[in-house]
Image (cartoon, rainbow, N blue to C red; front, side):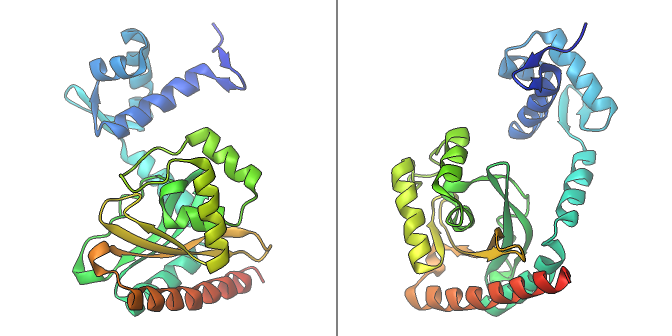
Length: 256
């Protein structure tokens, strides 16, 4: 029997990807839990689990399935092949060292935000982005920074697809309010997020433009909100402006 299509997608592939995402979201899941999450027949879910495990995308530990290391390998490959990765690897540590805060370079893919390279020097604390999880565009400074360079049509397409879920009590959840926020970002030249994506975290982001003149990502600085004051914000913005210019120059040189 041929796999059924859902719109322009194959239903079997769609189910397998949903299973992987559910396993990730649940931090490991049993067959029973995945059957409940997907609403599919137990036998169907079991067949997908067997196939995903066979190819290394999932790993079974007792009755619980976890994401396999193969996905890390693929994700790391995707990260390193990005045109901005090598430049980010050089510039982001400089920014972290200069500000003594967490710094990273993020990109938008498929309507979500992910950190391509991250370094933290703030009080020897661990990076808040080290797990490379996907963030919504509307709650992060990097998302606002990147989307401020997009057309309203493109922004609305992303918002229509993913919505504006509340990550914290400070998250913007209204599309029109978010569009006004993007206009403010364009006017001042940088984006901010005060506890909108992660409670207690403060972030500033500035868009980085590639050699073709389109935005390729955002360079950012992140710290606990208790470390914020106006003087530090100004210093961080100055450092970001400088490093964004360096980033763009090195991207151009890389393409020569």
